[in-house]
Image (cartoon, rainbow, N blue to C red; front, side, top):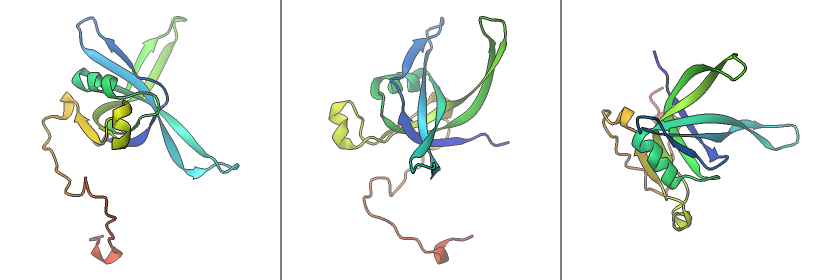
Length: 150
């Protein structure tokens, strides 16, 4: 089974860092992800996706992210449920972040931005790290359809 989510968007508010009773860091925030199509008035609508990160990744997000920060998130969809104060069962869908890439420009780094840094959560440190040879390239790479194997 595959449960993989990849998102790029902006934070709608400053993230909320909390600690469990055992002292484990957890952070939650919503990310606005623009839809591919425009609405009738020409504006782009966005979906607000709830994100949760744990441990060191949560603390790094708290340190570097703020309202308006642009990020890329890789993770998985998870569900949980709880009983609200009225005794009704509430089901929640959220993305459990495993990797976060801070996408704010380097010029914003001095103003609380982070440049183009990425951080992996503990959940995915056992995967091999892939070095992207084009990650720091500013050049556009043209690939023709004839070069694709499918």
